[in-house]
Image (cartoon, rainbow, N blue to C red; front, side, top):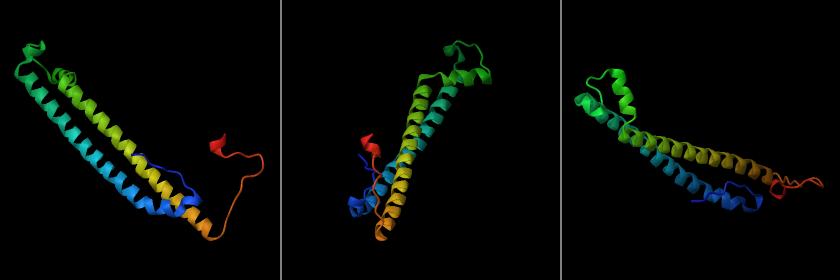
Amino acid sequence: MTLDLGVSVNTLQEQWESLPEDVKIWQQQLAEAMQEQALADQRLTLAEAKASVAIRKNPQDFGFPKVTEDTVKALVTVQPEVEKALDDLVKAKNNVTALKAVVEALDVKRSALKYLSELTLVGFTATLPAGVKKRSES
């Protein structure tokens, strides 16, 4: 889904009308991403526990006649299922971070719309001084 974070006096009403739905959509996506992050964290814990049990049960399968706690910890982190679960957790955290940024950007847009509305209500208009270009024209 694309999101327009721009603010324009020409489309002020439409932007105000669409803002609540935009916030709702992105908040829902954030909630789902946070749930997926929690599940990924649980999958990592489970993968680590299963790997730890397997290592302790049959240390010879991992090249050790006996294992110490440090050896178990080290071996657990390099098990493929643990590495995959950790990778999934990192991706889930990244997704949550990105969606939080979108939600925060929508809050900034809300503030910008509020101030632009107030300025419009008091009749404020502005033009750029001669020779100054808009950012989009630079």
